[in-house]
Image (cartoon, rainbow, N blue to C red; front, side, top):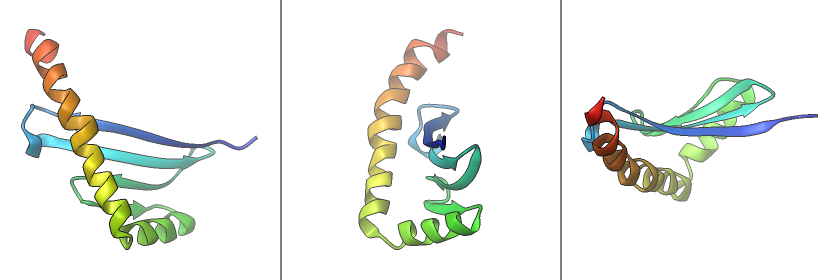
Amino acid sequence: GYLWHVDTGCVFNSSDQNDIEYFEIYNYNKLKLFRFSSTLDKYVGYTEFGIKQATAFNNDKDIIADVRAKKEYICLNNIKLDYESALTKS
C-alpha cells in the first residue's frame, strides 16, 4: 500500500515565544515532499510535487493563517506547561 502522513511538532529551548518553532512535514512513502516551518513562515518543497504544493499553500492566505494559529494553539499552550513541569526539574 501507500502511506501519506504528516509529522507535526514544536522545537523549543525555552518558553519564550520567539524560541519556539512549529513545523509540519508532509511525507509520502518515506519521501519528504514539503514542510512548513514557523521560523521561515512558509512552506518549502523538496520534490517537484512538493514545490508545487508549497507554492499553492504559500499563496493561500487561509492556509497560512491556519498554520500560524496552530503554532499558538499547539505549541504555546503546551510548551509553557511542559517547560514548567518537566524541563525545569531535570
